Image 1: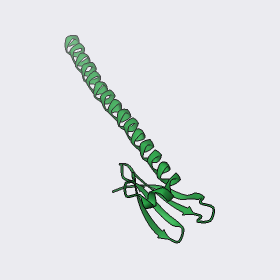
Image 2: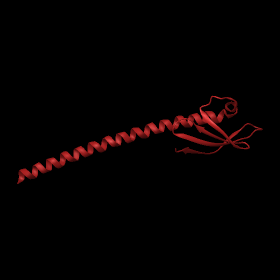
Image 3: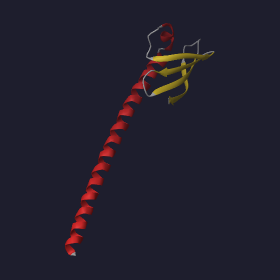
Image 4: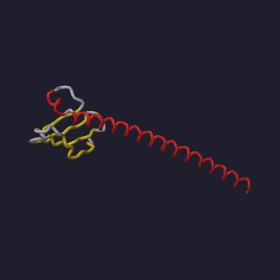
Length: 109
């Protein structure tokens, strides 16, 4: 009887170890996915920032790292071409040339 009890405890412990190893592997994959997503998000934000600061030059250029749309008078929407896509609405003052970011959002497709 004691032998059966000890064997069942050993089986339970080995099952627990297997489940803990799987959980640890899933957590490591989750952390790596989050880090990779943060890197891609920072690259997209850097691209948007470059397009935002050089919007006057990019309007005349055909090669840009961003999609640029005119929404109205002095209003522009800039979207990054990379994933995750970020969209920014800008107000451009034609007289002074200042660019003001009104809002931004992550575009989900």
